[in-house]
Structure formats: structure tokens, C-alpha cells
Length: 103
Image: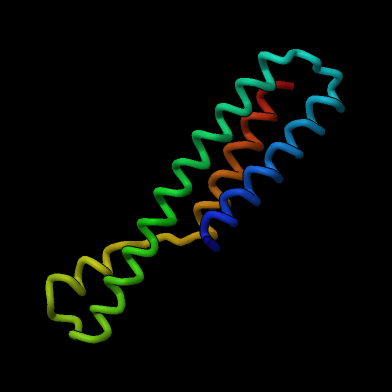
């Protein structure tokens, strides 16, 4: 539930940001808003997958801690990098780039 709340919060903030941007630019084209809505949904799905992968990675890191650095599972866990903050930052940058390119 907490991870889904993060995704929903990002979606709501992104919607608010693009709506403000479109209003400030005087853009009333509903097809552009629809495209941005679709893009936000795609990013949210991607973010859900990344967050689920992060949970999996955290579990593998727990195995690494419990079993030591010589096991295959622990090596796999150590190879999984990234995090929630990185996922959110990447999505926010992509949204900013998308909005910036529409000006």
C-alpha cells in the first residue's frame, strides 16, 4: 500500500504540474492533455514495476546479509542497484523534458 501511495502521489503531482503548465501557456488542446495523461499512466506502470523490483532486491540483500557474500543469491542481490528515489527522479525529469519540449 505504501508503494502504491507513492505512485499515486507522483501521478497527482504530475497531473497538477502539466495542467498548470498547459494553462500558463494558454493551451486548451484536449488531445495534448489526453496524451500527457496516457504518458503519466505509462510512467506509473513502469514505476510500479521498478518499485516491485526494488522490493525483490531488498529481499535478496537480506539473503546476502544472512548467508554471506559468497553465495550466488547474494551476488545477484548486490548486482541490483537503484531505488525508489531514483525512479521518481527519472520520471519527474522525463515529465519536465516532455513539458519543456511542448513550448
